[in-house]
Length: 102
Image 1 (cartoon, rainbow, N blue to C red):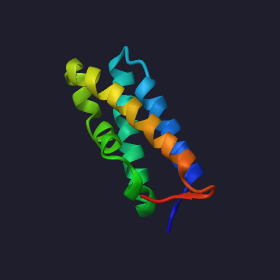
Image 2: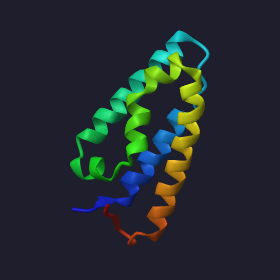
Image 3: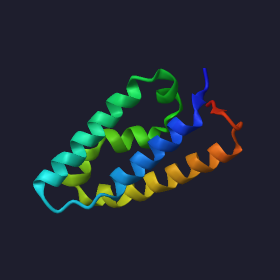
Image 4: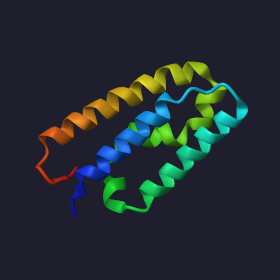
């Protein structure tokens, strides 16, 4: 069954918000890590959605702790996520009016 475009659009917005969060304290860092873990789990509850999520997104969600340990990794991963999300969003524009399939 195809995935609803609104679900993907909301996921993209949620991922952008996570990627743009500024981290100044340990509590903020822990909150971002927890939010990444929760979002990954939520995506996993919808097999159709999980099937269309790009690999870059899975890495972003799985590697939250690494981004905070290695700033060089973060410098590479955050722009890669932004590029991936922009391409995914453009792909939605070319999908049918109601759904998107991989």
